[in-house]
Figure (tube, each protein chain N blue to C red):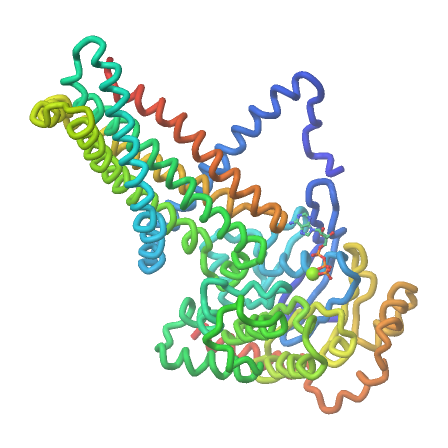
Length: 266
Length: 279
Ligand SMILES: Nc1ncnc2c1ncn2[C@@H]1O[C@H](COP(=O)(O)OP(=O)(O)OP(=O)(O)O)[C@@H](O)[C@H]1O
Ligand SMILES: [Mg+2]
């Protein structure tokens, strides 16, 4: 029609090229939105009440959920590790190993997944609704930049709150594993605590927090992207919500591997 | 026709293509300062798409939009935000902010774009809500009010800034006849008091012939008739005739609109006000 578009490749080649192409397009869209968020985030007006509302939505309202998941994760890990380590008489190490796993992996990854499921889906649905009911256009018409008004506070909340929640996950998880190990599986409390102290070094906590920071940014960015650019009414908003959660989770696992291999010397 | 210096908005060869569907096939039009242009045309003709281009909510596939001598697609985000302070729009689907009360919706542009005190903002917003007869709903949220009320709140929110260019996308659809005439009167008042340039999309022929300085008729993305109400009525085009006839409006009524001020008289006021703002 318009003549200036490249002809679409067909058949076998297309079936390989198309998905690769759309992944790069997607990365382009995310990078563009991230760039705009930074550009508009650093310039006034700073919308403190909106940021506070998002901190509350992402953080405060997730504390209970994240704590609960953290508790059970810690408890399960205690049981499984004791089971495994007893085979070669290493159950003294359980406290340290559980804390290590929680700080480096479980806390940031599972927290990010919980935030994607709870807050990310909510963000995609809300922004998607605002897009389809022209509220985003209305903001723009009133000379309010919608990225600054809607996207920046949400990403900021992710950056701040996911690390905080991951730390809570870690502490509650260690508490849960201690409770199961000491009360349930009669490990020695002194040795349990001592192994945590000797095995956990600051870089373990640091790796966990760096991951949480990156995940917090990624999950909120992806969720905002799907809501902000949603199209197609109620059906479109539903799809946007699903995509936000699915792609957030995929991105978390992918980035988890990348960060781990960058920060870990084996 | 219009003197070039008097043109407020100029649309040149506007083409809009979504995917492989061409929605606008090269639209040309000029809107004079302090003039009310009414856009009529069937459902899906591209009217909303056309006016969304005027405030850069859409980017033209081809062609340009010149407002006050500036091609608005050449502006970056920051410049555009500045230019938009002079525009207002009433959206077809209201576009009220769900998360705010009716009052906060109307106060929103004042809070964002002016340095008025909260007391002045309250006063201004309540006056507009009262003019539209929805002041009693000020503390409700958009989910709690009817469609017609939401429409009026949307109008109040656009009018409260008294912008230089106001776009109304079907301001009277979903309103009862009495309220519709109130809205027509408000559109006229904005023009007479502040020399506002208005673009009004409507399916309501009574309102079209009451408020229009000029009418443009859009069919399938093309302007098929454009001119004063009398000129459009005289156009020898079956679609145009069918469209106006089937509305059943008494086409004689526009001829005795009394002592309505002309766009030229009001343009003076608009320019003075513009200089005032700049100074
Ligand atoms: N974002 C979009 N993507 C694809 N197609 C679109 C988009 N927006 C509008 N269209 C199409 O453009 C055409 C014109 O739509 P538009 O909303 O401008 O019509 P309209 O004249 O305002 O109609 P109505 O009187 O019913 O409001 C429609 O066929 C619509 O499907
Ligand atoms: Mg429309």
